[in-house]
Length: 70
Image 1 (tube, one colour):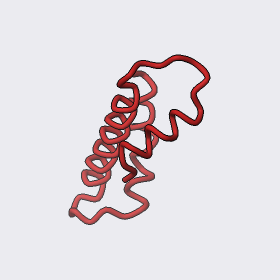
Image 2 (cartoon, rainbow, N blue to C red; image 1 turned 135 degrees about the vertical axis):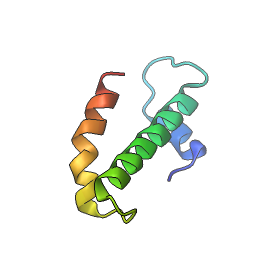
Image 3 (spheres, rainbow, N blue to C red; image 1 turned 60 degrees about the vertical axis):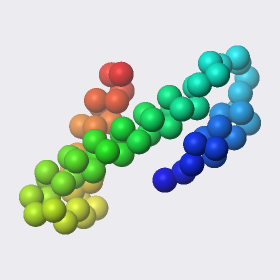
């Protein structure tokens, strides 16, 4: 996982508009939440606790749709 400092640098290098002071932490937390939900869904899809690529791909579209709506 990338660090918050790295997220800050990426945002700053692409910043064309004024953004909230804490936008970096909001983006960082959204990434963490996305990965958590993806891992939980893949764990459920695996059924045995061993997550493989096919389990992640099976739930990826569903998790992406959840985040698209937010």
